[in-house]
Length: 324
Image (cartoon, rainbow, N blue to C red; front, side, top):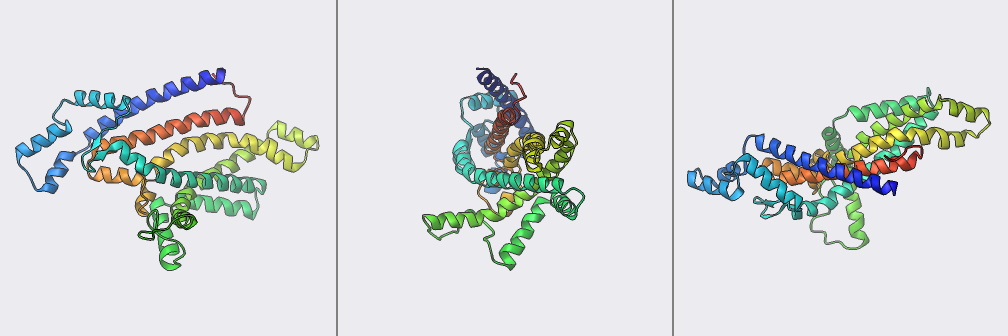
């Protein structure tokens, strides 16, 4: 009962946060220079004032800003994200069409980064002061400091252009007409480079965090007491050190899991991955207000959802935490 009450409270807080985020995003997008009318009129080569006025009336841009905001929030609360006049399709349909590709990419990158980051961090902490620790630390710092777009382009250059091991762009091989396991294998090959590229930065963060927290926990009194009692070193590492060291890592992973969806814009752009990040980038260039706001809202909703799941996982990892 207490857990249910906690979940309902957190869901209510998340919904309120989404309304505030939608309001802020609306104001920021409207404050940016340019609008869909200017882009469409420019592409059409039309500067007729009547034509521009008709477009503004069609998009609702001739209304006061407060009226536009009220209408937008009303539609959002009803689950309607609007209509993309550039794509001639409902915004929600466009996002749902691209969402599986983004979830596949970010989910794979998240699992890889967390698994390898924790493993490398634990290895570095266990061999603190050795060449293994130094090597892992240097590699983690290197990937942490390397720009993501440069890493993506180098991956394409090395593994696709020179070695020809993996496909560079897209979600599937165009025109291959594959099915069954052949289609799955083709998709996995296309997934490797973007998922690894996106995972390397976060893996470096988790490795450094795990190493630091494990070294800190290893010096605590309860760990020294376990050693004095003669508990096996492997059990001390797993049950006492690693379990307690994972608490801040879980918190950080939960925060970054939501931001990873919105942060995949560069990766999806370089690898031509048909996800929300690429859709958001195209909407920005085209000044497609409704589509851009829809992408912002969905990514914010995913971030709120992952934060809620993180809170629940946190209570399972550490039973000492009480739900309030």
